[in-house]
Image (tube, rainbow, N blue to C red; front, side):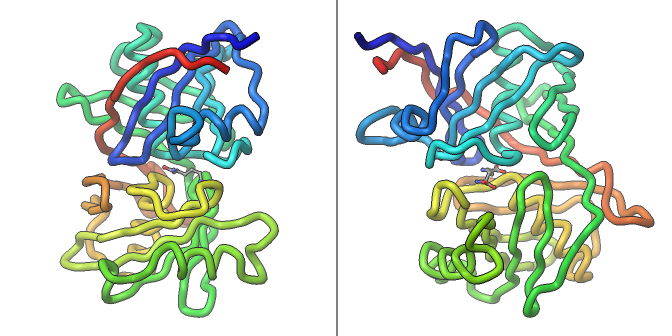
Length: 260
Ligand SMILES: N[C@@H](CCC[C@H](N)C(=O)O)C(=O)O
């Protein structure tokens, strides 16, 4: 017999998520079910699904699944959305610390609703054929190009994601253009296997890569994605980049019940 599952739908600059309050452990996830819930025809439709779960020592725990149904690494936009959701549930007020797959994250909600999320430190940046590979909680490939509006992100992103060194574990692929300390970014996401409107760990990776390549002269960077605007700020340390913050909107779109 089908069971009714309560869900919430959130979006952060157009990167959209099904969020489930799983503090009671009622939602027993499996790859097929998560994939179906993320499917716009057979389910709700989203780039990923997030469970908010109890944490022993912190405000809550975030468990993230890509739209392909597999549990994955950190999601920056999802992290900002789950913070807004925790506030909606009354678990937190303005500030919180939560557990995620890549460690602890601090966050705060501004009076204008923008959510600031502290991301992992970055201490390894690799060059790859004039491109950059780094991990901001999820693995990212960064390619700086001239004409970011016209590139076929689906085709070129898939070519890189399925190329030799990345086939097995996969990688997210970002195409970026720098203009006067503002970055324009489009991302092909692993696990969605397509372009999404925005990727939080992706824009964080591009901002740090741009600083590392000396393409920008500020450590508070404005970013434009097809889904809206974000900012990233950080400090340069002797070993890399720390105090990395991703800042932007996170909004509830609707809530409902689905039979599964
Ligand atoms: N949408 C994301 C990244 C989600 C994880 C990614 N698809 C992966 O598997 O690495 C974000 O906002 O960071």
